[in-house]
Image (cartoon, rainbow, N blue to C red):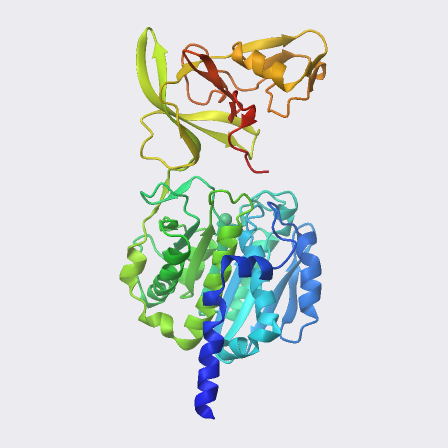
Length: 467
Ligand SMILES: [Zn+2]
């Protein structure tokens, strides 16, 4: 009988999260959070729903500066205390989604034996969306303009005070500081985005490793095989320069074994559902490893083997463009990114030998020559059909100037009207608008319009950017 119970527990573990496929996760994950911006209104009904569950004990810790409640959700009854918080940067919502996946998983009836296995050992405290005011307007900072993660010493933001008071009251053994990083971080030398980056923050300038920090490094080493299996060569290590004003570093100096998780970009994953899933898988694995103590067998050398983040990813890389200046032809690579946050204007980001960089989209322009585009002046109403637009592009035009109201774009292709960035003319200069033509002896083949590459033969955009 006892043997059967052991077998049953083993089967339960085997059929658990470690075997969860992408499809199973997609079917399981919390609905309503697969979006680029997550606001308090998105999580409010979920908070209300989980609040009804006796597994979860809710405490209103206080309010954001503009009055939105900030909750702590407590579960389990073990002596080991774990504190996790999300979205202290308002425009970094990936972990908020993953935390609601975790809550859904914990609450699932099929997981009764799993949650029982760690809830005896661990008391878990979660503070989702520390910065609801920033989330509301999709900015990093709070309503005062304060970066809450640089307010751990000054504590001038109500949100920072709430987090600090929670940590001092709970005195957690483990802290999970859950963030997003920008999509241009590469996983070391790999020409891939760092879809997940991890860090055991330093607690002093010397970046010493004490017992507490070593545990954080072991927690990272413990999940490395999982990430390597799920997304090989997409794991990075975040810069461990001591940041005296940050919460992670400050908590680390309190002796809390703190892990920073940064969700990053992934190809064809505008809403960061890949790092969301990995966050969820890591949370489950960390709960298991902390409850059983098994993470303590992880080798810090595995942590040290994770390559540091490098700022290397480009949105688009065009290789081997022939560029002729002063009658001297040269082969060069062109990278451009969309300045999404600011102006949604694509700019030329780098020029020359860019073979060391990875890109979300790339193509080889061998045999194609750079050609600067001309402006088409709008003087009367122009209803632009696709064939006519492609004729204009073939004729050397790349953008329109004049009264924007005069243009009706029926082409289903992107147009650029009254560009705010300078455009390339004879010379190519960084920070210019990514708007130009690529031609061969048969004429113009591609038009790059505000960073979007139009294949003229097919009348289609090669890459669609996310929202
Ligand atoms: Zn952040």
